[in-house]
Length: 169
Image (tube, rainbow, N blue to C red; front, side, top):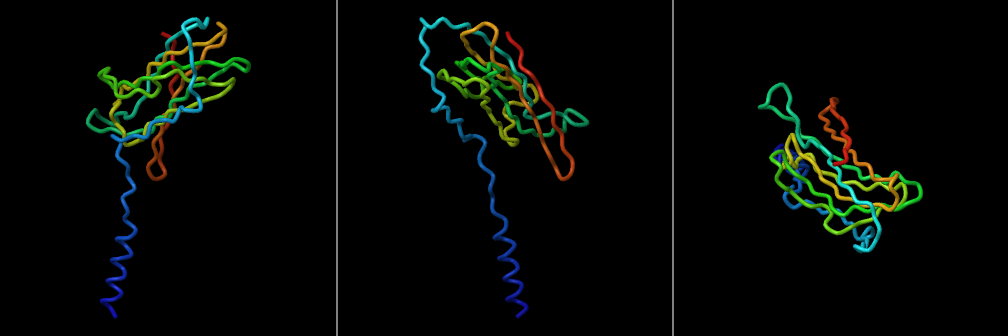
């Protein structure tokens, strides 16, 4: 009877140890299908570019110890009346190398709409100096998009979070 209980305990423990971790190299691209826009050169749009710093990891105590962070980069249309367009969203690492392109065909955001790009906490390709470059367009000069990011990590009862805001280039 003791052997049966021991065997059942081992099976129970092992069955609870599923590996749910997904590969960060095969990230799931954001589905922008419902946001695709067909812009023409003849459209009279005001174009701009913005830079957003993000951190997929930060240093703790020394440069030899780091904390991984989940990044949520938000693209926000602050206009309550006009649509804006994002023509590209490129993600770069600390060395300035392009890691991936999130938007490679123009997309639109309805008035007051927000869309997000989430970078998994285990994806440290960006490093401590990661950033985005966004190319965008809109019809009226007074309403351009805003870009901000929230970085967060939790462990047990302790957590860290902070934000950054994009700047126009």
